[in-house]
Length: 159
Image 1 (cartoon, one colour):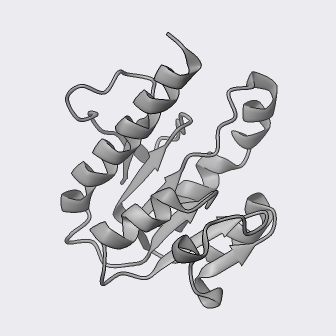
Image 2 (image 1 turned 90 degrees about the vertical axis):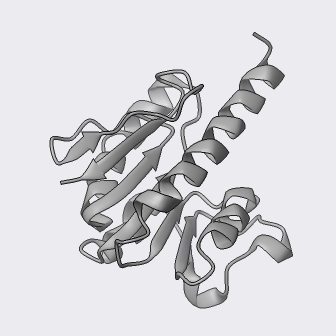
Image 3 (image 1 turned 135 degrees about the vertical axis):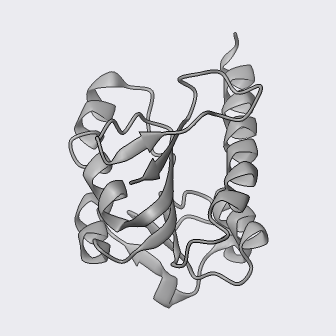
C-alpha cells in the first residue's frame, strides 16, 4: 500500500471512530482533550461533533490554520508530556491522541507517558481514542467500527 493510501485510511479511520464515539460520550460530562493539534483538522471536526463542549488542544507549538485554532484559554502550548500533567483528574469525556510518528524508537518514548496521561485525564466511563496502543488495565479496549482494520487505531473506555 502506498503511503498516500495509508494516510487516507488512517484519516478515514480517525473520522469514523470520532463519529462513532460521539454517541458513547453523550452522557459523560467533561471536556474533550485533543493531544496534538497539528494543523487543526481533527480539532475542527471535534467542534462540529461537540459544539457545546469545551475542547482543549495541546501541542508543542501552534501551527494550525487560524480558523482551526482554539481560543487562547483552550490552547496549551509546550511539551504535551509536561503540560498535560496539570490536567490529570480533570474528568474528560473524551481524550484523542494521534501523535504517533511511525518511527518505533520515537513512539516507544511517547508510550512511556501517553497511556498514563490519557487514563489520568479521563472521567470514569470516558473514552480514549489513540493512534498508539495504550495498554493499561483501567483502559478497557472497545471494538472498532466496522471497516477499520485492527491496529490502525485504538479505542478504550476508562473503567
